[in-house]
Each structure stands twice: as C-alpha cells, then as structure tokens.
Image 1 (cartoon, rainbow, N blue to C red):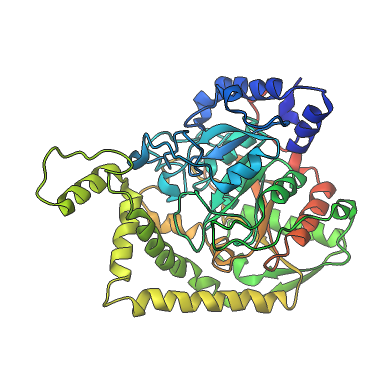
Image 2: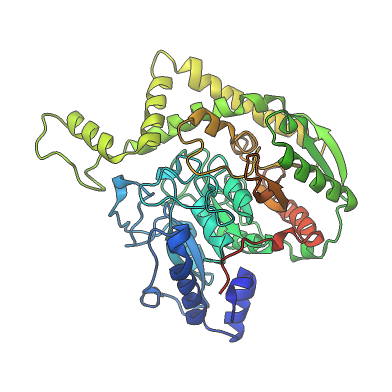
Length: 484
C-alpha cells in the first residue's frame, strides 16, 4: 500500500484498526528514505533498529526528528562538529510525549549548525536540496524536515522555530507548518539557540495533523519554567466549520511594500480574494514597527545564542584538538575556532560586542524596548481584527549558494516572520499556489500564506486554516519524481 498518500491521522487509524501494522508502515518509510534520500540528503541518522527501542505496547507511527531534540543514547549533533558523537542521557520532554502517543522516531533530520542560518548551506554534514527543483534551497534552518515531508520520506516532522525556520521551509517546500504560542511546548532537553525565541513545533501534510500533534505536545512541564500550567485541547467541532463569516482578517500594509516579489504578491492577493469568497471581512491594518524587527532580532538573538554556546568548549561534548596548551583560554579558543563554523562564530562575535559594558544600553536594552513596541503593534491590530494574514517570505526559494556570501541580504528574507516571533504569537502556514522564480529559469515554486492569531488562540488559528484548506486544492500540490 502507498502509505505516503495518507495523513498522519489516517496512518494512526490504520494501525489502531488493524488494517496495517506499525512494522509495515515504519519499513515503508525506511525504504523511501533509502530510495530518495541520497538525492535530498535530509537525514543525518536513520533508525533502522527501531523495534528494539519500543518501551510501550502502543500503536506507533513514524515521525522525523530535527537533530536538535535529545533522544536517549541516540547521537544528537545539531549538525555541528562540536557535538559530532554526543549521545544525550535523556529524552526531550516533547519526545517523551510523542512516544507515549503512538509516535516513533525515524531519527535525526539534518539542520543548519545550531539552527543558525537560512538555507541548508551551513550544516557540517550535508547540503539539502528543495524537492521541487534540485538547484534551489529548501528554506531556513528547518528545511531538512520540510524536504523530507514534502517528498513523503516521513508523514510529519518535529522541529523548532526561532525566527521563521519552520515557516519558510514549509512555504518553499509546500507543506503545512504550525507554531504555537511560545509557552505551549516544553523546551526541556531541546538544545537552545535563543532561549526567549525558540519554540518546538511541527511540519505536516494537513492542518488536522498539526492539531493532532498540538493536542499531544502542549502541556505543563515542571522541569521547564516557561511552560504553561494547563493543557489546551482543540474542540473537534471546529472541523465542521464551512465558511469564515464570523471572521475579520487584517492585512498589514507594511508586508506589501517594494521588497515583495511580484509573483508572490499575486498569489497572496488571490488568497485574500479566496478569503473574501468564504465571507471573511478583510481590513487593512498597520504594524509600523515592522521596519525595526530584523535589527531588533539580530541584537537579541546573538546575545542569547552566545550565552547558550558558551557551554561548548570542545572538551565536555567532543574532544580538544591540542595535545598541550598554556591556558584554558588557549584551549577553548582553539577548539571553538576549529569546531564552530562561520555563522556560529559570527553570532558569538556580535554578542561580545553588543553585550559589552560600553554598548549594552545602546544596543541590547534598546532592542528589548523596541520588542515591546512590536508587541504593542500586534496588540493594537488584534483589537481591530480576529486574525492577520501575510506572505511567509518575500520570494520563492532561490538557488543554492546564491546568497551565501551576503548575510545581510539573507537576513532580510526574514522580514515577514521575525515580528511575530518577537511577539510570541501562534502561526500557521498553508498553501496558496505556485509562483514563478524571479530569474531566467522562471521555475514554478510553492508560495504559502501565513496566518497569525493573538497569543494562546490556537484553536481559532486551526479553524481558519482548515476552512481555507478545504476550500482549495492547493494542499494536494506535490513535487514530481518521488513516487513509489
């Protein structure tokens, strides 16, 4: 049977009803990985001995795991030489919850080193391609999972998002992403990049699959002090909603300015018209602090990154590269110079500058104040509308290596995702058709629509996305060349 065509929800139902077995489903996806992953290069490690690892007599379905979530005694590297052979002694809390709810890890999916880049080009292990066109990037630091799900090498994937690393790869590879409010999921034993921004979440093929995983994963974790003390369950009645008559949707004017590619704009405008056909009221809103969001993020994030990376010294998690040395400073400097790649070093240097005694008030303190203004922007907008829609990225996927030497241009591609990250909002991204690339090849690539709701209003988010998904056939778009 072709299990790739089934949603995660359907796979679990098939296993529970006895129509198939967990072994058959798992082996089916292993065979697809062996057949196609040589081309995509999505996986760092593959769980071929999964049967010996089952600890509960439950119905299990496979899920791909970003190489940033600790799994007990399984190599977890963050795609960095700093952690090349690290085997953590514990499972991340979200891994424990997935295991207890019919999910079995297909093991580790590749990523940018410590989730610190945008294109798949900074992993020390592999460079992943976009399944739609092999000469294109698959998106931001979570693109390996997006590529794996888009090419049916996994029915779903567990990932993290800091500034858009779920949204952009989902958009550029053509699958559904969902990120909850910051406090919904435990970050315990998820290797930290920027602690006030990191959020575990999922890549799936359908909106309902995202809700299924949300119901499993959101809950209080006493070991992690930012998780909420109550569980949020999605009311199944929302799947009966057929229109958006009850909804007022905001369109931020700042997201439709000159840097938005003409072909992407056209697809998003068509999506807005579809929302109108579904009886939603559309209203223009303003988020004036958007223009400061990227600068704000690239002050707050490197400060937190450098603090989190200070634990990696080349001794506790890997090995040092000097047989003799005069001081620990010399040892640490040499190990970090050798084992960290360029982007990690760049962000450490940025932090050292902006958190120094002479510049703290001028940079870091000022950035946190602007973050508050960005949050107030969204609060004002949500006082006028129920939800906000926008593009995910200003362009379709660009060519591999096209922007690798221009980090400023790379950072600007995050213009539509960073503001909501700074404001800790929940979002979902859903398909809204294909658009031409803005170069000579004119290749057709996915464009995805971003939907935002106020904090802790995930149920409303799922309801809006599901109505739009059911009213279109865009979710059935898939890349060619990955059949059984």
